[in-house]
Image (cartoon, rainbow, N blue to C red):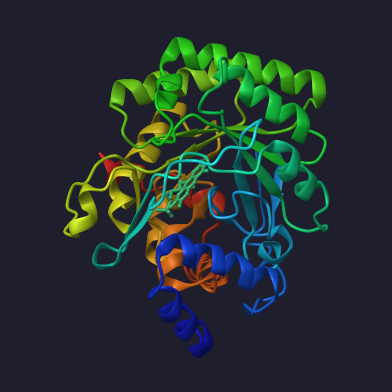
Length: 352
Ligand SMILES: Cc1cc2nc3c(=O)[nH]c(=O)nc-3n(C[C@H](O)[C@H](O)[C@H](O)COP(=O)(O)O)c2cc1C
């Protein structure tokens, strides 16, 4: 981390977390954040996941650039791919503030934003206007007061289909009441069939990813893997934030919402490994949850990830973490004489 980044982070951490987040977006927009200028890449890092060509496998997770306001700068920040959103059909304000909390000692975040966003029209317009570069996906959400949530995902997909490089069906946010019920077998199968049929009519071949929660039993993970495979989902993102507060020391642990960051690492990696075993490595998996170091990244891939995403660690370590992670992965792959494909899932048995 450079001195400028250190000072910038220290200043942001003195502010209310949501205000700090908004300021970081503004700083990116105005070009105040030093950027590597493009993705870190090499033949070892380059990969194709579900038909998505990535210069490196380190992506930005959904929820940082919810409204697609800084797609251009983020595309130059060293990531191999980014995901914006969640976008819902209609704009909605989300939950009352405060709704974002830094649990600094735990290196964790709690959020209960509740899909605050400017709505699909504004977001997809920005997506369409982005420069050429790395793949950009859109996280699909449902309006809180929707009469047909399954159709909300299809609506956003339909609008974004001609421009998104992939879309993610996010049924795992804990901050929209009953949303996670869509992970149940029957509801999930119906939802995925509707979304995938819509995809086939508007843009066959557009990768549709499914993002799941970390708070699932082994039986539920097995069911989801089965439904996702049967329906023909292109990849699974594991995982979203957790409702668990296991091992959290911070007094803000009692805040309602989803917890992310370092304490999520083990839980989300166990779900990832379970999914990898269930799908026999045939369905590509993106590992997300608690990655904050090169070693975490390495272990996530060993547990079954073909690519990863990060978010909370950026709040504590700054945007320079993305290129650092990608570079260190490249060096270690070279040093250990292995490839990304060989590494993926090679340590699945460490996770029970
Ligand atoms: C403030 C905040 C907002 C988020 N919003 C979304 C969202 O809109 N859609 C989504 O799928 N995940 C969302 N997430 C979850 C992240 O994409 C990611 O799955 C989770 O934070 C775990 O990764 P991390 O430990 O690296 O942060 C959000 C996370 C945070 C911290």
